[in-house]
Image (cartoon, rainbow, N blue to C red):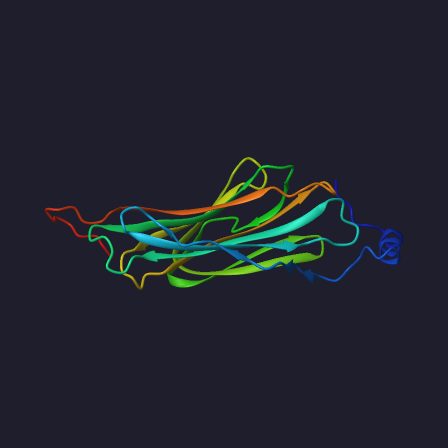
Length: 203
């Protein structure tokens, strides 16, 4: 059974400076990666990632936020018979990380297009990010804490069909240990027109 703290316990925490107002994550400078292309001139993807400090008074482990985000789209004058179906960003953990929270935590649907706000919280610290996209954003958390992927699902055939994907994660590690997260990204494409043309689903 969970019980609320007594007045005496609340006063003791307040006197010790353990009750704080909600505060924002302190973000470090993002790192953006070289543009990713496929081998058949179908699409492209630009990915970035940034770490954030989510530490606060009274914490029992070091806490960090990581946001990974990308834009992807079809190549100008690209492949005549293929289109993008999915673009994803992900993180892999190779250390002692434990989950605090992650976002999105469920599949998000947007028809036609709009904003998907992402948010994670640990103690009094929050972190946020917004993905502007069309179609569907699907989270894929793995069994290992700190491992997850977020995938935009839809279709992008024309050069102006630029889509976003993104994720926001908060993880903790025992004090004085080293973070070990690695980013990954990519996209999936498929046939949308098969010669001789019977049904054209491109675009």
